[in-house]
Length: 228
Image (cartoon, rainbow, N blue to C red; front, side, top):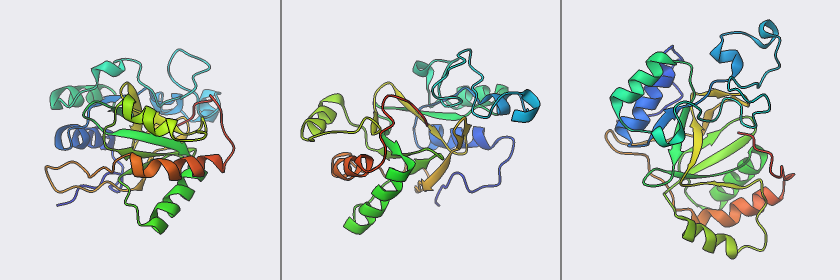
């Protein structure tokens, strides 16, 4: 049987159920993120008097509204079913964050326009990709775990790497569907699929980097500004 997240009708417990699949069936450590202000308070932007995309965390200039951990901190990410149920019982609107690195998936993210070009190029080359997470602003390709030494060698071989191409390894995180962040709805651009009891297949990073660098270089570089 294949598990596909994000296609089921959205319910009050959709986020909890997605977190449970990731944690208990796939072994991916997760934790709740800080919800965007409009969803955490169940107010529309007009009712709250605040623009869309504001975060419910204390930072008024939050660079990744609704798409980052706060309480608990990132180190609390877990695959424990009881903890996951408790978190989302208390915060059913909280985004699902995947803590990347270690034995968990890592990710490479880039602007959405560049991501769409890269996926077309992978298809043309016959390169298989794994799950791809998308928001209105960015795509994130989930890949097999890699370490800093591997990443350093790959980047050293490049003439130039746009700062808009980001690498989410140990100490990083990626929001997962069906979360909503300040950037908008998180969805699967390419669905994860796995036999029951097995985690989705993940590609190695190495074959993907050249295409992702080229695709990122073809769109405006967002510099150090973070946006998920």
